[in-house]
Image (cartoon, rainbow, N blue to C red):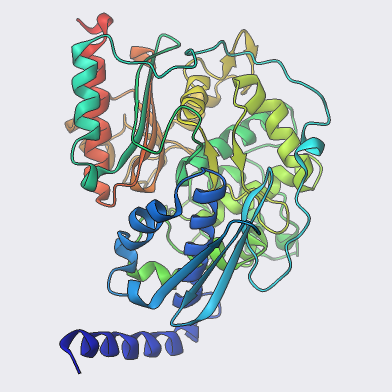
Amino acid sequence: MTARARRELAVSCALAAVLLLAGCSSRAGRPARVATGYISHVVCSYVFVSGLDPARVQREDIAANPAFRGFNWALRHEVDRERREVAARALGGFETRAVYRDGAGCLNLNGAPPPAAPAPAEVESDGPVRALLPEIAGPDVVAPADTGLTAALDAAFAEPDVRRTHAVVIVHGGRVVAERYAEGFGVDTPVHGWSATKSVNNALLGILVRQGKLKMEEPAPVAAWAAPGDPRRAVTPDQMLRMQSGLELGESLTAGLSSAWDTSNRMMFNEPDMAGFAEGAALTAAPGTAWRYANGNSAILARIVRDRVGGGGVDVLRFARRELFAPLGIRRATLELDATGTPIAGAFFFATPREWARFGLLFLDDGVVGGTRILPEGWVRYSTTATPGAYVGYGAGWWINHDESRGARFRREQGMPADAFMALGIYGQTVVVVPSARLVVARFGTTYDLRQAMVDICRLTASTIAALPASR
């Protein structure tokens, strides 16, 4: 037996032992199921929503992913373009399939037939909605006219095998002043926001508040917690948006081998009813007293949004289009749904890089676009008010830079202004809003070194500000 064969056999035995032990907690992730669920869903979305080459997705997003390091030989997936499905397997079994549905993105089936997806015609049945935000660029890629901006983009795209930057869009004074795309990406490529989706969920909640349909400081309207004496009845939407619910929902801040056991990833990739699974979590800390970043909070909030606007997938997509996306001129976005028609609001929103920048512009003027208020007055201030105990620098669905948390201090040391705030997703998905500079910087890619990804976006923002005419 060769040395490589012996190593693979040893890893196989270790993985088998792990799989046998993984069921000790009824809510823990099962490593093989989580791994195949991640692969099937991500590959499906990247191929059928973003339109990326499957070979590139395998190379960059699966084979290079450190979470699968040492186990890639045990993982396989197949893309079926005719059926628009992806099947992923671990150790020759443990199969998970994801299917693409027009207008609703990809869904892991988890052994069940695909539920009916909202048809795009149904979502748009309430007629056209006028864009309130003017055009920010013409159809062509906007090359920087300033050598400083050119240098900033050069640095952002340097070392492509390390940074894997896919797109950068810089908007100043309401217009794109510079942008660049990696090969295979372009102006019309919908890109994955990962946890930047949480900031989109923040905006949908804000619209409900403006409409008088939700109060953030009152107990959350969750039927599963309604029994007398249930301590979860005290949890508020504000506490969930700030990641202070006190619920045992796992951890979604990092990604690695241990993530295969995490409750949060089981919810994301193996549970057909994500909010229902999250609502079943026990309360392990008094609401409002402990900060723990977990996708389950976003899942419950997304269910609240869905129920407040009608209760179905069609209703929530129609609401998002009418009240948020169309007024901002966002036309190519895909907000993926779980099997119950609830948005996967913790991680699965796709939009073009320019559309992500348009979303950032909403937060420059306290939620007012084209003279029309989209978000309630003061919502941006609320969203960027520091959450106690959030060591990364976190507000309410947005990352912040002005407090004395460890994360905010680090970003300021790297050159990001104190008034900047961010929609942030893992691997470097970032929409930075800098009110003092009238600036939005949107950057997307697959940078597995999370510290490097943060350093890069800070330096890109600082270099951009230095190059702007107003800063000279």
